[in-house]
Image 1 (cartoon, rainbow, N blue to C red):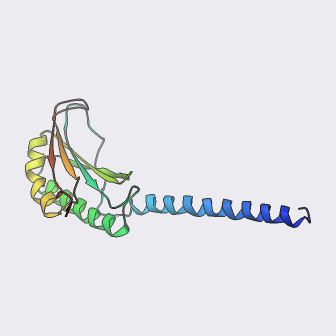
Image 2: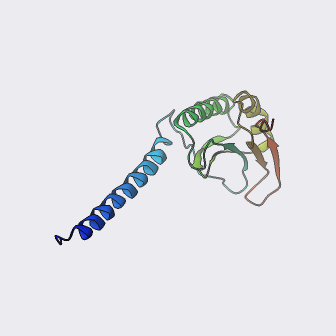
Image 3: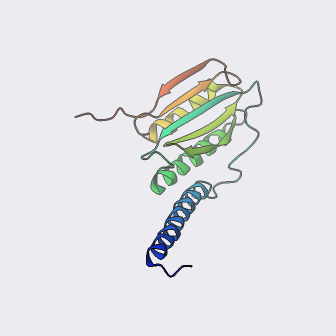
Length: 160
């Protein structure tokens, strides 16, 4: 490295900037890993949408544009545990398939022979969850591209 003070300042600033970027990337990776913390086994109980199966897709708004806060993710994990328990208590209804966090939304996937039955079974749990405004559930009556019905879950934002 040159002994020129200006060069040393620029090199040091570059190194600090690179470290800053590494910290940001590590925090994002940590957030992604935290969303996959262990829960009841199995968390992912089958292959996604087997073509003729119907789906219940829950979209929960998060407090930020990334992965939500840790408290939110914990609350959603409890919701998922409750959904899994309800589905397992009624054999033949369907299966919990997992979740995705990102872009300020958590998406939960449940598949089974009847989206209506899945909806009827899970809606009391989803309403009790008190989802934030902008959250909704989709009943999809077949493979992707099939007819869908959307039901809002969250309370509208308070504009006063």
